[in-house]
Amino acid sequence: MRDLPRKRIRSAVTALCAATSCAVFLLAGCAVQQTVPEPVPAPNPRLPVLIAERNDVFQSLRSLARISYRASGGRGAFDAAVLVRRPHRLRLEAFSLVGAALILTVDDGEVTGFLPSKAQFFRARTSRQNLFRATQMLLELDELAALMMGLPPVEANAAWDIGARALKRVRPDGSTDILTFDPDGAAPIRWQRLGPSGKPWYIATFEDFSDTPFGRFPLQITLETPPLQRSYRIRYDNPEINVTLPETYFIQHLPEGAVRVPLPAPTG
Image (cartoon, rainbow, N blue to C red; front, top):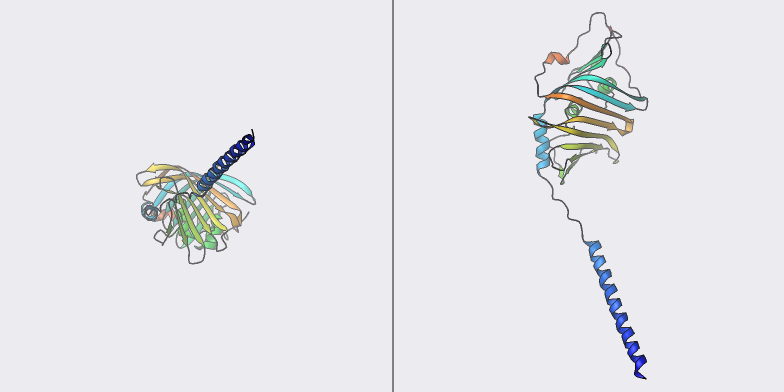
């Protein structure tokens, strides 16, 4: 009978040791699971090649489009005919219920516009500032032409930092271009340009891709300019890619009876 308490004590100690060992084992197992690093996807060296190939292939566009915009002054939308011939040719005809509301043409020499309803005509030297006054988009002409062709407006053959689904490059002015690709790595779906402070200057998305003989083409392009609190969306309808567009499509002359006016000031 005197040994009974001792046996109980030994049994209790054995059980306590076993429980402690089990707890330590479980905690150790949890710690191991928490510290296992996620595998890092390998860089895809094909991405810079894809950007260069798309820049070479997509050269001209003719399409009807629905263009919508949003700014601090409000929002709106209109139908238009869009012609693009890279790197420096644009034509936009905005439609109204009674015909063309605006015919805008741009080449590497002049920005010209005609407002038929008001018989007003404007002409100015092509520059980033004048292009902004005419289109409300603060981009260089070659950047705007590329963007409207569904291409990120970047230097294709630059030295990129390559990721599994992204490219990154610091530009000479201190800004940074970042490209994001679809899961298949077949086309870029997002472009960002960040200022030297890291804040976004431009954000463009490319969506609803259509297969063409020249590769995948986005039917919807959205551009946001956070510093200006503006956004634009282009929705193409049956675009024709790499069609022949004569030089005359991108030149306008003063129509008979029209009055020359200054370029409009940006609004909104």
